[in-house]
Length: 265
Image 1 (cartoon, helix red, strand yellow):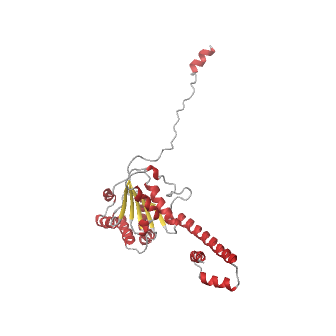
Image 2 (cartoon, rainbow, N blue to C red):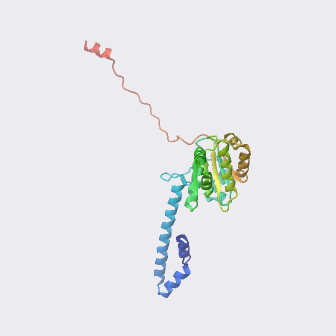
C-alpha cells in the first residue's frame, strides 16, 4: 500500500491508496491481485517519471545524446584535500542548502563536465535545470532589450532550480545588460525553495568585474553570488586529448620528369 501511495502521488491522481484498498477489499481481491494492481500503477508512475526526466533534459539545453554525468566523470584524475567535498555535490546538497557553486581553473580540467553533471542530476530528480554560456546569456539579454522583453527573459532565468552559467569572463556586458544580470541574480537570491547557480570560469572571481560595465549593479550582484558559495579551484593540465593518436606518414619517392626522359634515352 505504501508503494501504491507513492505511485498515485507521482501520477497526481485525485484518489488515495486507502480508497483503492477499500475498493479492492470490497471486491474481494486476493493478495496476489492487489499486488498486481500496485504493479500496474508502479509501471505507469515509472513511465511518467521517465517522460518528465526526458522533457526536463531537453528543455535544460544539456547534452542528451552524450550526457555529462557524475557516473562518466573520472574522479580518479583528480586529487587534493577538497576531493571528498567535490564528490559530495552528487547529493545535490548545495542546491537544497541554497548554496551556489563555482568551478574555477584552466581549460580542460573538468569544470563544465561537473557543472553539466550537477544539472543532469537535478533533471533526474525532477527539478528544472538550465545551461547557458556567458556569451549566450549576453545575447539573450541584448535580444530581449531589442524587443522590450527584458522581464520575460529575466523571469525565465529565475525559474530553474539550477541555473548553470558556463565560461564566465568570455565576453563583456554593457551597462544595461549588467543591470539585467543583477536583476536576475537578485530575484534568484530572494526566491523561495531549493535552488542555486553553478558557475564555471577560467578566471578568478576578482577578474570577473572587468567583464561588466555598471559598477554599482555588479557590486550588488557579486555580493549576492558570493554570499554563500562553494568554490572549487582546479589546477593541472588539460584532460582533453588523452586519447589522441599521431602517426607519421611519408609519400613514396616519385621520379622526376627529367629522370624518366633520361631512362627512355
